[in-house]
Length: 127
Image (cartoon, rainbow, N blue to C red; front, side):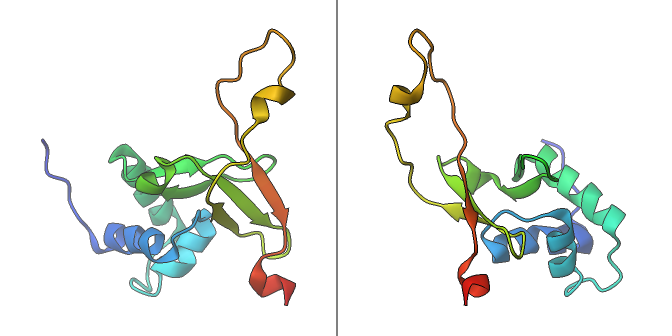
């Protein structure tokens, strides 16, 4: 196994995901990581996220009609869905699954995978 250089920038980006505990946009990662490394540039965040993906620490969360978000691979490994706040544009993990989706599939079709994103206002925006 090849040793990987653990720069302060990479550590700050990794910490952003660990502290947030929810899917983050690149801008959200940047806003969090610059607290630890004030000189951190957006291009460096993109490179660090790509590096964390290569290390299988972070995975992308596709967002229909928008930029992907990213979350820790250990969270993504467990089946879950997401909640999108339409006011602040943040994404949150939703534990559990409604189930019973096979009955919605047309006759003769086989369901292999599904993604569900709930939309509305998060607790902070709803108040």
